[in-house]
Image (cartoon, rainbow over all chains, first blue to last red; front, side):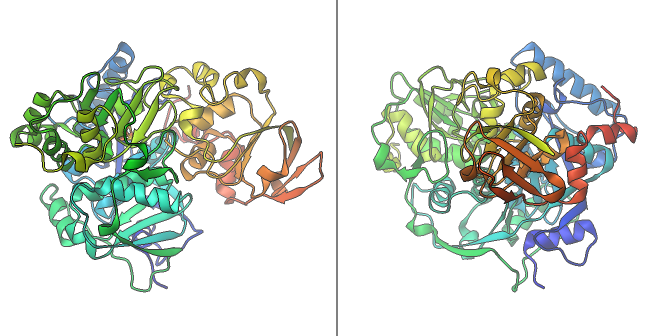
Length: 420
Length: 164
Ligand code: SF4
């Protein structure tokens, strides 16, 4: 029987000839990613033994640099933990700091065909690399860390065949908003992306789509591998890997064709992204207090470049706070070199250090009561970025940047082409 | 057999509502006090140990945060929903919160009803109306963890983590 790319990864990882939806599979885990949040007293347990320290990476991202004493204490505990168990892939505050999923991408930790777990729900971002990556809970993570294994209850898969080319000013975030608006959630099932449009979709765009799979409640997101992906990983990690291609006769719950050329800039209204997307025009003119670009979904160099292109030679509207957070310090350095940081800063944006920060209302950009934010990040749940009374609209980096300039939500076409 | 008073919630109840970011790294006691503060303030003072939470579709959507632990700490006897989010389900298994899918449960009960759950038969019934529903079975190994206090006791027994 034919298998999807994900099913083939699990067959390999569990030592079975084949696996199918409904199976409970126990797999060997190739990579366990721990975060600073893994080391808070309410989350951590005193670990006696680590199964294989070479398979572990510790990446500080939620609270970096430490905004308070509690975070500082948790990070000190984690440093001692990494030392004690000899974990070499340790990303502390510094040049290799960043949001875990972005750091994993920068360093090619998510090998095609492998299994990766991390105690963060957007771990599916690494599905862009043809990696069976998913967010797990802290207890699952401690289990994987100490035993080298975990379990998955396998669901069916929805396949998206992407064709056509994105129009100018439209990005992967709009594709996500289109899928969330049209098809709703994908709870208890997996998503596989493939099709001819992949050739035009950069790794950054694929990572946006994969990360946002968490917001569709997908269990796993997998991209079909291609040469661009294989080259990207090889350039960053010398370890061998075996990408997994879906079988031609793979069985899917549904197979959906999406013409990227037909997608327009969209905005999700506050509190949910599920069937909550509207054309920008429907909310245009909505006054904003804050505009944010960042997170594991929209902190790539492409995202910063797009924002810089739109604000070049313009000024952020009075009364609007425009925050831009690169996904990693590597992205920050690349954006600095390309001139994007200067362009953004001159326009009045605040470019922060790489962190989860504002995305989850943790620090550096928390919303106050009744404030309105337009965000290119992952979530617009009630209270997500601070006060429960704050309203969070979600859009692409282009739409967010344009809105920061206008002072209210606008179509990115208003500022197309920038002003040299 | 589990039986308890029903509290009813809708579709897509997310983990940020159960465990808001503001108390993400606070003590379990503080986290427990913050459950549903944004969507149903005051509920934590009304819910009693042994009560049953009935949810809609995709209950527990959202993040990996230990929201299931907060519901367990409130003493809920179980959560029955139209469907349970996959990541929330993992946390429910691991923290020992009984959380199962029971299609039709949302329409079949009103708040304040008494709901009975017989896990051995994979059956739930509304004591007021007599309506009985099938509960979606889960693998035996996971059910054992879920009803037996979760994953940590096992890891302690195997000497992989220290007891708290
Ligand atoms: S950037 Fe946001 S969504 Fe991504 S890992 Fe951090 S908190 Fe989670």
